[in-house]
Length: 308
Image 1 (cartoon, helix red, strand yellow):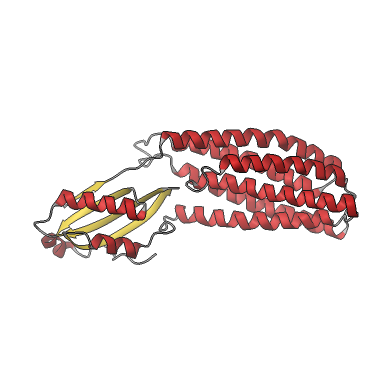
Image 2 (cartoon, one colour):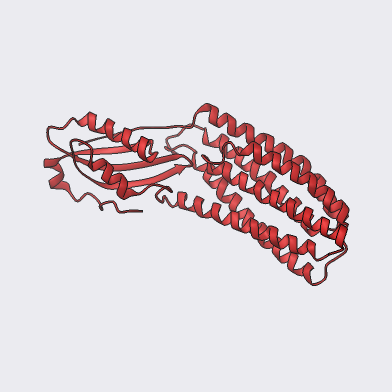
């Protein structure tokens, strides 16, 4: 019997790029957030204040994400043998939970205002919301480079996307109030913002919880993994498969392979690692090899993998 594992780490360029994106977005967001808070108070606009509050949560989320990126690069210790990679997932979960809370608070305040819409300065509301939209679009472009490969960056990007939609809603409400006198447009826009925030946040929370519960990564079928390994020359059986994610883009697997007595032990391990990496994006695998004669004595060592 024997085992071998293969490691993969994010490149220094990827890490530096994510840090740079988050820092730039944080500076832009924090700078304009003050203008939105002042504008919302002066204009007496809930939609604008909701957008400003979302910008504040954006700043906190971006700061949290930035800290998580730096923590994730700390080396493993004797106490935390996998290092601090899960810090990014925890940051994404906190961001998602904060978004859910914000959506509920916005919806509650909008409901109270809907029955008696207050006076709102539509012109000022429209001008400030336009500035917020420009800042948010810039942040979306800055963060878009890392959002597909990193849940932490995606969480920050979703924060900014929801805030962008909030700026559009605030602009629409400001225009409706300024040109049409429709004061009810302010709480209605706030309801729309809350709904969009709720939708984006729930997807993020669900994904992060799946990672923390060590679910099979999206797009991977354990049945397909097992079948692919069984097809390798010299492999008689594959069982006791476990696949999970340590953090975004870092999938891990463990599996037992039963091989023929005269099979090339190291050759099979190398081929299995290449198969897992190229076909299933599993770049860290621990493979235990059992010879046919020994496997018949210790099997079953665990449940046969099923589709997940």
